[in-house]
Image (cartoon, rainbow, N blue to C red; front, side, top):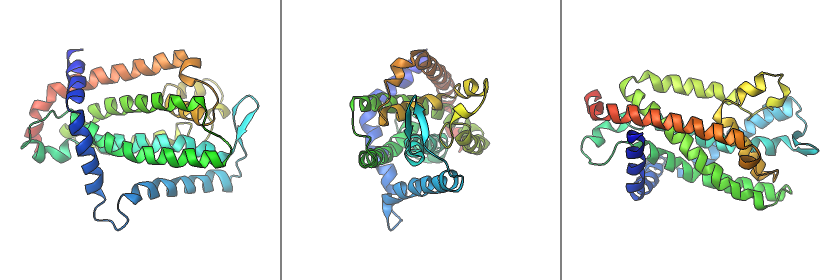
Length: 272
């Protein structure tokens, strides 16, 4: 608990630094490209179109039932889930290698290493906000107008931040010690894409598979986003037991990540 409090305190105290460095991180990553940061939007859009073509057009997927008597177009259903997946995937993957790729820089600077994963997460957050804005505009033209349920997007964005940071704190620590962890994480997350309700509905499966799939905290975030964008319900309230489970998982991951990070970070420079 002491380690978790220490890590959280470091994030709060260095919040201004995190925001400044995260924007610089995003800008420097794309400075050699002619289209610059536009590629951060172009790439996920291309992926969405590919998945829509394969799972929507070729397989002739009809409308998706998101609630009793409520069906929505497959492309909108896919878009609502994919934008949160893209943020989670990019932030987690880049967060896992955020420390060991900056060890030389960190050896010459004086600020907590726990803020490094958050810098990467924030850099992806800016892209997510743009993607979310584009999605909301598309939904307006499709007839799913802004409503009171959109307010819960703020909650689910914060929840995604917490989950991603907790995972990145663990993976960035172990990746610094054992570089293969990053490769293993990359392979695992590619598999998670097909084990989450992003490209297909979990409800087509028979029990106990749907229940087991819900153990994945990403399921909670994806369904929460869809509930907000389609104006279905207050997902985090109507599914309060699932909400407690989600935050329980996040708390455990954060506690574990804080302990291992604080324990090993003083030895990170040794892995140069």
